Image 1 (spheres, rainbow, N blue to C red):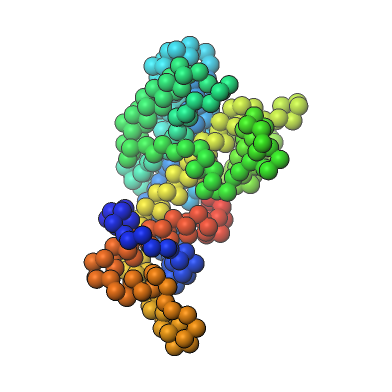
Image 2 (cartoon, rainbow, N blue to C red):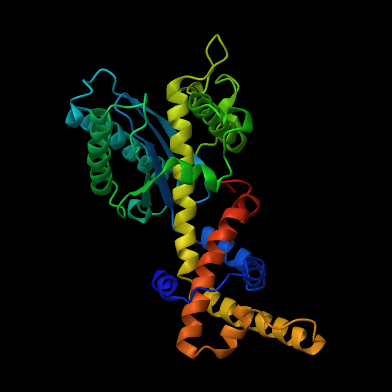
Length: 341
């Protein structure tokens, strides 16, 4: 309904500041915290799929890591896409089983209460000189499709969401530094470091020595194995597998927030309160201008006053959708202490 409203809404300049103020006055912080707190047990799987190695990360409803790791497939011929997909599927079967086992051990609820969502880093859709051959792009596209379908079946979840890595990174304000943006190769290396830095900020306990790591019992997997993923080599560098896992984490965190954003967009009380609040703010602002004779109401204010009920509802719903997306981008870190709470 909200997406349809966006398509039909008149093309007026949005007042993002007023939209966010109306959302705040409508209690979006409270509604979001309530959605997360009252969420059924949730597991969000993020995947960074490649023919040689696939990184994965599983987060719970609060954004905490349940498990993560990588699936090596370099031993399989790169042309054997079905063989690679099978190896990934077998490994994800173990991830699924171990996650359910820990959930069952730590909770009295039934296994059926666990809800899964899957996010997959989308493959590069455009050719970039020096990076990939066309054959490699097609192979990766095939692999993504097969693994996506396998996850949809295995995890009994909604269709996996394919996300371009730049969209997920931008959501968390992860970007290459200015010094490296002039060089494609330098920028690519730098963005990997920025992603790793972000993950380290969110999950610092995974970056300590396995001998000193103290993990909560609800986390899945072997403690030493999960912390050793991020152990640096003797040159002080992370392994390529570690970067794959970091990318998977960002995709999982992004997918989780998109899930709760969709919940907010479908929240009838929040939509109604926002619409009423925004109208009150707009009318009050227009009236203050008229009273002071300092300026005339702007185009949006005049249009809103002249709109019929149906057109006004459609327009306000489009503002609500825009506002929720902007608010989630700006406020998710403060609301839940990063991607976790």
